[in-house]
Image (tube, rainbow, N blue to C red; front, top):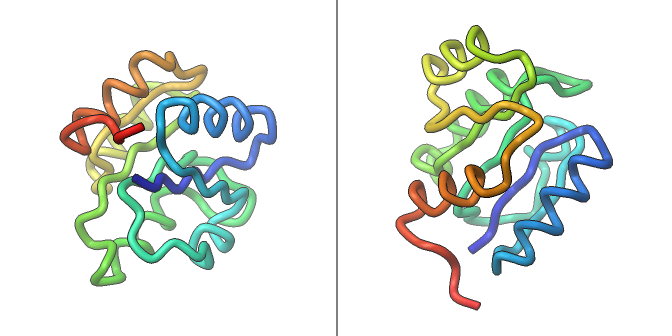
Amino acid sequence: MHIVLVEDNPLMQQLFAIFLRGQGFEVTVAATGAAALAAPVASPALFLIDLRLPDCDGFDLLRQLRARPELRHCPAIALSGLGESDRRSALAAGFDRFLTKPTDLDELILTITELLGGAPER
């Protein structure tokens, strides 16, 4: 299963990518909204999107991704360090789940497993 991680912080990119790959996922990392929109992933299983990106916000990015028929139902998790106000906005914007940063990796994998109906085969 393929996850597209949209995160501009290099340290967070590395942390999430190493962790998710260790859990059996394929991971494509994009540092900007534009890079996520151009990612060469035909049918990702899930998007993991930071709400604060250098070229757009995660809300805008999700709208653009969900406008594509093939991605309309792809689950998306919002990531933010700003807490409850972002949680309400993210869920209202169509994100399936919201996690705060710093992100508990156990909570991350439980959330992904719940959204995807199981863990990837190793």
